[in-house]
Image 1 (cartoon, one colour):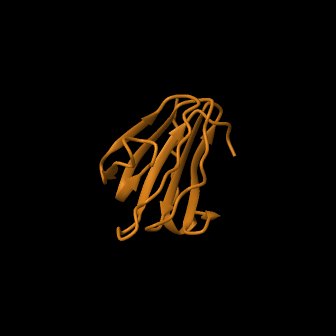
Image 2 (cartoon, rainbow, N blue to C red):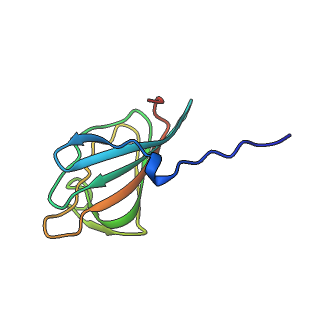
Length: 111
């Protein structure tokens, strides 16, 4: 049985603005799994939110912070952060940094 390989080329990504200096693109959404790439400019913050399911963050580039994690600890590219269910978080990138790009995956509802 042949397996279908899914992919998206960079020029085909549809980016949407979440808030000032924060954009995201949906990479994959299937029942029980969702993958989103998020870009956060330096000094900007994704709106505070929580999920009923775990949220996992991999820092692709730049510097990622969350004021709720170890008093706003900075995470460099290659870092991984796990948020248990119902954990409120505020993804950000510190002022004076180069901003950040993060890959977020969770068991959220597609869309």
